[in-house]
Image 1 (spheres, each protein chain N blue to C red):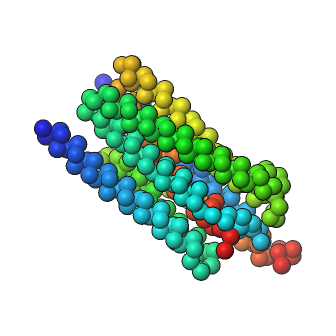
Image 2 (image 1 turned 30 degrees about the vertical axis):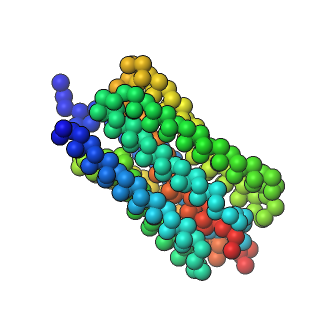
Image 3 (image 1 turned 90 degrees about the horizontal axis):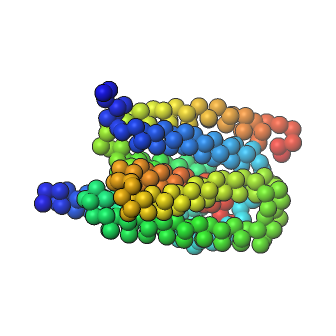
Length: 191
Length: 102
C-alpha cells in the first residue's frame, strides 16, 4: 500500500484540494471587486454602523473555537460532548446567517438591489450581494454539513476524522470572512 | 492521563489563538475609523487579515503540524492568488488614464 501524499488521509487531502480551489474562487471574486472599486470614482460608502458586522465576526470566530472543541472531544472519544459542540457550532452558523440576512434586508430596504442602488454605481449592489452571497451560501452549506456529519457521527456511521474534515471546511469559511469584512464592509464605511 | 494533559494544553493554545484573532479583528475595525487614505487603509487591513488568516491556517486547521502539506497549500494558493493580480495596472489606467476618468 502506497503512503498517502504528505501522510494525509485521502478524504482530508480531498478537502484541502477543495479549500485551495475554493480560495481561488473567493480570491477571484475579491480581486474583481477590488478592480472595479478602484476603477470607479466615487464608490458608494453606505455602511453607517459596524455593530451588525462586528457581531457576525465574533459569532463566526467563536464558532471556529466551538468546532475545535467538538473535534478534540471526538478525538478523545467523548461522543456526547463532541456532538453537543458540533451542534453549538451549527447554531452559531445559523445565527450568523440570520444576522447576514438582516444586513441584506436593511440594504434592500434602503433601495439596494443587484442592479440598482441609491448611492451611485449599480455595480456596488452586484458586487456586494455576489461576494457576501457566495459567502452566505458557504455558511449555509457548512451548517447543513455540520448537522449531517454530526448526526451520523452520533449514530456511529462517521468517526472523529470525518468531524475534523468538516471542521476544516468550517474554519475555511471563517478564514474567508476575515478578508470579506475589511474589503467589502470596512473600506466602505460612511465617515 | 498524558492524553488529557495534551488535550488541555491544546485547548489552552486554541483559546490563545482565538483571542489573538478576536484582537486582530478588533484592529481591523479600529483601522476603519482612522483618518487615512483608502489605499493606506486597504494595505493595513490586508496585512492584518493575512496574519489572522495565517493563524487560522496554522493552528485551527493544523497546518503547523504537517510541514509538507503546509508548503503544498501555501505555494499552490499563493501562486494562484498572485496570478490574479495582473489586472491592477489596467484598473489604475481606467481610473486615471482614460478621457472620462476626470
